Length: 349
Ligand SMILES: Cc1cc2nc3c(=O)[nH]c(=O)nc-3n(C[C@H](O)[C@H](O)[C@H](O)COP(=O)(O)OP(=O)(O)OC[C@H]3O[C@@H](n4cnc5c(N)ncnc54)[C@H](O)[C@@H]3O)c2cc1C
Image (cartoon, rainbow, N blue to C red; front, side, top):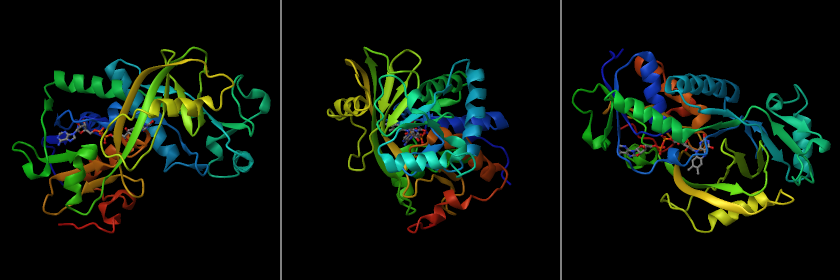
């Protein structure tokens, strides 16, 4: 079992900082290096939602992962003395009658594994101003984490402790002198290194905007595929886009009007909407929407991967960093669902 020497965490986004908090709470020494290349975490809406709306199913380990995420972020917000975790239910506007029927059947208590996460909304309870001809449902246990504040305040804290460096790293640098292991949290920055082992990290381009409408859009997230999330300052975050054909984190000029059009479709009157912010990023994703964790090569036993968090970094992240730490310090084996061996192209060279 490895001793508790100094760990190098590479990458200062959501994954790197959650990893740092995990090591901090276990009393393990670490340093974080990050080189300022664009991070998905500086774009993330930070939403958590235990339900996959496409097929009305629970997300992967939704109950356990989300409970752990809540505990972890609420502990960190106390340590950082700021507000990170925000409970905001989601109202899902049904696209058609077939979807409405399935939702309402599954919302019956005990009827389905998703039942515990979804509710029906009576026609008389549809908020004023929302157009929902086929009805809507509610997910009470949803919300968002202020990822930008989490990352910035965490980095400030590590910086003050002398644990943070503006420094690039790649696998060809090896394990730097003084460190016992390297934990790779570089998001899409790890694409080339992981490709050496037949592990394809896919870049999923996404954009979000922040807007100020001149009329009230309510205090719950309304989702009709496009969603509008109310923020504490009265503005709304609207998103997201998902594209595989754009490989740079660039803002596309047509996106704001497209997103505003999307949320306007379910409103009697969307009002005039002022665009406050427009951001783009690349989600680090895998073919099966599961992360890549653990050691990927016997030749580099110091090298541990914690990557591929895709669209759901906030809810799965705290459990993923715990799994990686358990592998390194408790000698636990990598769960099959996140092991590199599940890639047919994997070469453990
Ligand atoms: C538009 C959009 C909306 C999203 N919305 C949500 C959401 O609502 N909920 C949710 O849970 N997730 C959401 N996500 C996904 C979420 O952003 C990711 O799951 C998560 O941020 C990934 O974090 P990460 O730390 O792995 O990667 P990143 O945030 O990309 O961080 C990687 C870090 O590594 C650094 N780095 C890269 N290369 C090097 C190098 N060679 N040396 C040193 N440092 C390096 C970078 O500078 C960066 O700091 C969204 C993403 C996008 C793009």
